[in-house]
Amino acid sequence: MKKMDLLNFMLLLVLSLSRLGGAVENGGQPGAFLFLTQNARSSSLGYSGIVNQNGMWAYQFNPALAGLVNYPSLSLQYANLSLDRELYALAISVPGLKQMVNVQLGWNGLKVGQIQGRDEMGNPTENFSILHTVANLTIAINSNNDMWEGFRYITPGFNLKWIYSDLYAIRGYGLTGDAGIFIGLPRDEEQAPYRFQIGITVSDFFGQLNWTHGYTESFSRRLRGGILYSPFTWLNVVAEATYWENEYMNYSFGIEAALRNILYLRGGWNSDFGITFGAGFALDTFARFRLNYSQLQNDLNQQIPRLWDISLGW
Image (cartoon, rainbow, N blue to C red; front, side, top):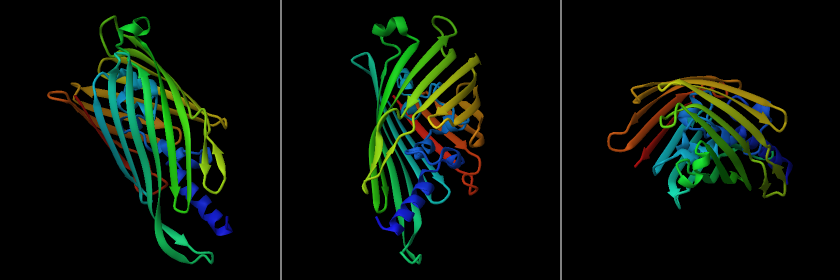
């Protein structure tokens, strides 16, 4: 590889794999752009999601949450960040296959546009763009399955991820996966939602990224745990912690209040990103419609990013 190609490659990695405010602390982990593609509800709660019963986006946090989805659904997500970065995500949930297993298909991507090219002398050339994309297959035990009756409030799940990165002249791909478990303690034998929720995940615990120039990067394994307490049916309080293989820790906290199960107000804090907040709207009259919005703290000291997602169930 030419010297200038190597310099461009390292520049692209820093630009595209940095995760909002945490790129310096985490050293640009392989596949770190995945932290950008987190749904609006969870990101507004300080990026807390592994116990958040947001099963329609389970592959982004805890694959076990897919087992809590009891109806087919389609979810879309979009965000326009600073530095010409655009986020896209898609999730399709299919519950009750063989009356036991829930399946979720997911896709998310990050496009970085208008990057200034340079020749070997450092002179500007034409602009170009890069793309990161991930295909997800999530499988979880259906929490309402009669065969799982003895463990109705314990749901395991697994997510398989195919990652592809196109850095203009250099491309990389790799296969990895996440495993998770959800434990819910109900208010009583019949009533939902759960009073306590506990979630544990192990992410990217195998595989590596293989680049076309022959270089490989191992994924950094992460252990994540969280607990959600719901003192009232209209109030959720959640706290989570993430331990990285390189001994880096991340903490998050969030509060969500529901008004007549239609309007949701949310706020949170994350040790990397600072304060987050957002809102949500739900309508179950004819179909299960969800619209969520979140606003994050300054992204790379540029414009304030905003994240939207929409879900429709039937």
